[in-house]
Length: 257
Ligand SMILES: Nc1ncnc2c1ncn2[C@@H]1O[C@H](COP(=O)(O)OP(=O)(O)OP(=O)(O)O)[C@@H](O)[C@H]1O
Ligand SMILES: [Mg+2]
Image (cartoon, rainbow, N blue to C red; front, top):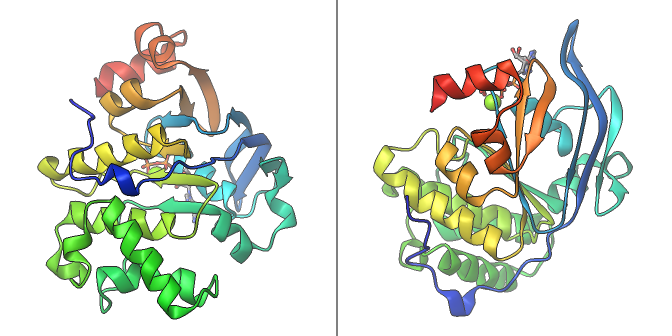
């Protein structure tokens, strides 16, 4: 897999100043089901952490605990040293961008409107400034020619790139990706992974739940293996993929590689 980023206008691509993320003893339950058990993790500014693990191991719940789509029971998450518990959840969503498996675009709005909406309505930029910013973000993801298209006239890969542009338009300090390429046809996966690799090179802090082991190996600064609500192993891609320590990780890798 090559991870060069074609179609992207580099002249228009500023660097990011990704924040640090510190997860401390995060515990989260749904009723009686304990889903995260004292999870701790450090993510340095401008680095990419990939989270792998079996279905139901708590990967999505961990991401959702970071931006409080699910409220933790105990523990804390510090973004740039500031506890997420101190911010109102809405304010937090300005600082932490999230991209989902299903793109969740507004179907009755064009790509440009989808990207401009939050800067205009939530961040309260003027309408013209929000649209100018949205056009820039779409250009960065190689979609300036598609600005006036509604989602149903875009491919899945293009829709996901609009969703990424939409998250970037809020100037997030951190980007969370939850299986951003899982719903895409195989031939569209590469374009989205290329874009994610490009954000990584430009200094965004990214936490990426993925089944794309090639991406994790190539792009991640650290790889986290979760099972049953715990981090079982953490390390460099070489440590995790070439030298797994636990029987659980060895079994998982034998199933997915
Ligand atoms: N809203 C919810 N209410 C109750 N239980 C939930 C909820 N969301 C997740 N769970 C449970 O929490 C556990 C972890 O789920 P989670 O979605 O975090 O797993 P995952 O690692 O992301 O799995 P997958 O790879 O299938 O996406 C599962 O047992 C799941 O059934
Ligand atoms: Mg999940």
